[in-house]
Length: 238
Image (cartoon, rainbow, N blue to C red; front, side, top):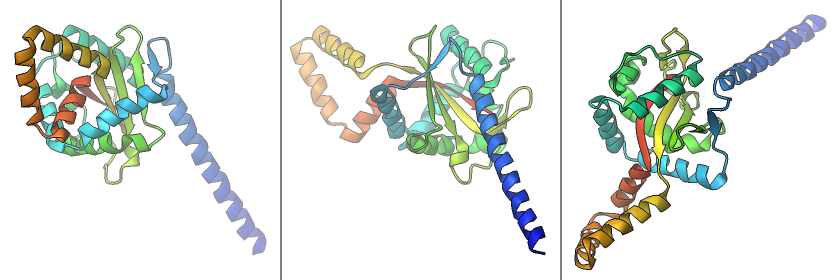
């Protein structure tokens, strides 16, 4: 009786180890689609921290996230945006995006389940707000399109996500969100603002600054962060 109990415990431990190995291999397989010469992981502490802070600020305003989604659903992508979306899909999925041009965010959201499409503003806001807590949150930059980036968030970290959130065109189930965005450094934005103020002249610039001060500090900061994290596409990923 004692031996059979020991055997049973040993079998359970072996099964648990196999599950851990399978999970690790699945993560490695998913990473293989991304590793290459085109997409590089953002590892600089300052740059990564600034990006995640900007997204956390955006995620803290669900109404702003909802407005962003509605705007993107109504607007077809530019050639540069479409190019990066197709490139990202091929790396993240290991397969091509079959959608014909022109297309917009509405076509991409068709890859998600109806439930997740309906809940997307809340799901995305929550994911952006808390993604910096998790080590499996990844940031990637493009070699050929320097300002184009990907934020990859695993929804398995968030209870109540009701996974899978969608499927790739070939039918693979998805548990992660890929947020595609253009990144403009705060320094370059500040320089642009200074140039605009100089072009206006001192009196107009003073009036403009006065109007800006009437906006709450919080909203002003959110608008600034939106201007440097220009989200333009959302993809479900395995």
